[in-house]
Picture 1 (cartoon, rainbow, N blue to C red):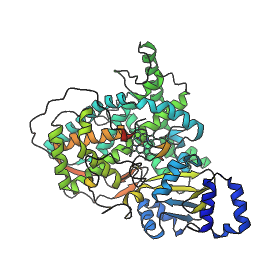
Picture 2: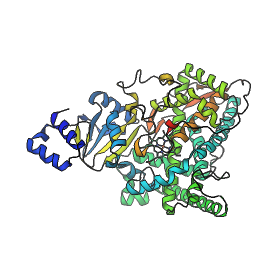
Picture 3: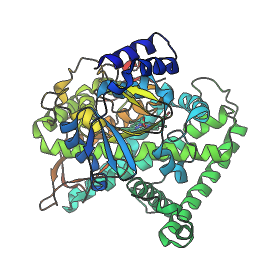
Length: 516
Ligand code: HEM
């Protein structure tokens, strides 16, 4: 980088106030020498593309780890460089907000944990994170088993009837059932029944995704807002969800009032281990709107992401039979045909690497969104406050600079007995759960959920792409979806001898998963 920018960085590190440096450099004429962020020639179409992150990848190969994409009055900085990503997420996170994301998600998440910034975010994070303690996550593992077993029953029927199955929608329902129980002890039972509430959740999710790829905020246009049938449907769905949440909160409050349990760090009600129950029992002093915002945020955060991970994992597995064979081998020898326990999670090493690698190739979401709240320096480039920034996790995870055979599905790129790969030990070249203070709070939950589901499913079934299925292509909302579903043929596997359940004992969880 140029001398003036080195000088500027050096002086900043020494703690000299920015204004002083600025005037000093002006005086020496240094500012004119600042390097400018490369400008990629883009069209708005690049971002409206079915899978816009693919366009961002092509531009990354041409323009490098940070470039500007401009159309009309709008411009975005696209970051694909690990050290700049680290700077934004971990070293100087106070200078960045959720920007556009908070605007888009306001109608459904309000001031929930994902969009919230500043003091509200800090308070809510402090209240919610303790709810996901170790005992809670362990209790969830049997829930994962029961829910996945329901999916297995469904696949069993399909296998007997010789019918193909659309796995993406089944995974979406599996993870909805799981997260409903985990967050507010509600059984959507969406794998079995199509209740109005399930429909309402999907209406709201689709709306959030439509808004995130819309070129203009049509939902803010005054008259349109009141007459659009689509928005009316969305509002009706939101009302149904909110009313349901209010009922669940009321029921849970009554339970908490009647119980004798003393609240403590690893507090958990065995009948209702949900996050909501923990929050109410903790005496968390919070408005009912804020509580609903947080519950909705957790529901959405924990639903679509995990579903997408399972979808792309199975897509990768059927394309790589040698990986599938190894995986089935491990699962047969460790799990047999019972539900996974917390002990199994430590032993299912290859299965875990399969999930790690699936998260590398298909990160959910593929880009992280931020806005600069103050002037800052990214790499060698000074930037102004108010810049909208996309950190492309897709680019980081597929960069030819950081990965050998970047596009290859190779779970063994991380040694089985090594640490679980995360953003810290991979130096921000790999960040499946983000990083810094806004890192995902459900990382361990989601890892066990997906490892457990994959293990149970491949133990019982063989999977193939359905004959004549449409090619699997990508499209994005918040997560990466297929354009036409993931159609597969499932066949039952022959069962090796059942391995009995091991005695439960306390196991220290892998600390590299960072449960707070
Ligand atoms: C944040 C990924 C599952 C709750 C995040 C972020 C990522 C992520 C990348 C950071 C977003 C950013 O920095 O802009 C995933 C993936 C999952 C998953 C890939 C599944 C495999 C879950 C689950 C829950 C959850 C199961 C809840 C139980 C959250 C919350 C945040 C978050 C609340 C916001 C944290 C904050 O801003 O303080 N997730 N997540 N996630 N995730 Fe997850």
